[in-house]
Length: 371
Image (cartoon, rainbow, N blue to C red):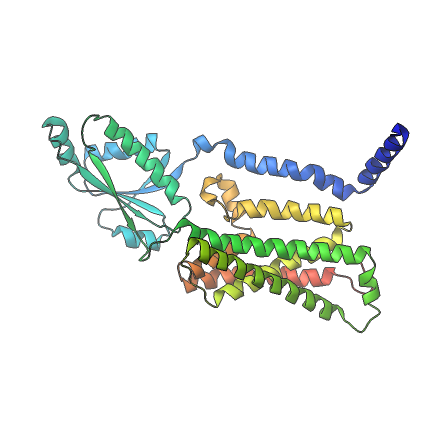
């Protein structure tokens, strides 16, 4: 080993890295961005509070005390639902994922249990919930722990408060069935963005794009061919994911015309972003770093893996401006809930975004000069 050669090569590598300012920026900035984003999300998990809607049908001091206990011990921000309202319909109309119903006769049963030592006296509170919400399980676990604490205060006796669950959907779904659409959206985004970035930067560095400009193929032909290629990969990937999910997890999802619509919109949106990116980031290494800087925050903040309700308020607002959020929600609306109006609404939003960035990507792609 020659230390001088090693040292000289090390200096060359450092200088090369220093000259590529974009790569240096994203290499250093990207991990910092992730630390800031996820540190903000998970730093105050112990102080996370959820909105909980409570319908108190008993309307007594004892039931009010129970609501107060939930608020203090359960980390909930309580909102009250009027007793005359039908809770399931209220949850559907207002897109609530959980409404807790305290039954009439709560105070009477509590008095029987505490004053007359009647072990048969108990009440059943009802969880009216939306199983499509990924955060509802967390809320119900917290509620169950608070109730368990109350029951534990009456140790040695049968539980006074019992719970029952009522889904606002006519069909019962498992978490995996809500998870798969998010994974499809994320996989299509990743393939489209990285495929475009890698292909464009590689061809440009090799001078292939410049040479193509001397052939009969036009820029439109070339871009269209790339779009079809990315769409074909997305379709193959989606089919593979669905086949494995059906075979292994026996999922029950609605496959309809919305699925190819959202795949197309997903491809156009992220191919457009990739074309814009490769216009301003010339080196392949820098382009990949820039794509990572866009992809990872979007992957984890748009609701593909965990509910955005777990995030601080400002990150929830940020999540709702990310294009992948609308692909996730649109696919879930069509594949899980068969809600065509919601799917139409989400497709319109992502469609407008895809159109804008794709046109910008076409403008940014310089064909004749191979830039």
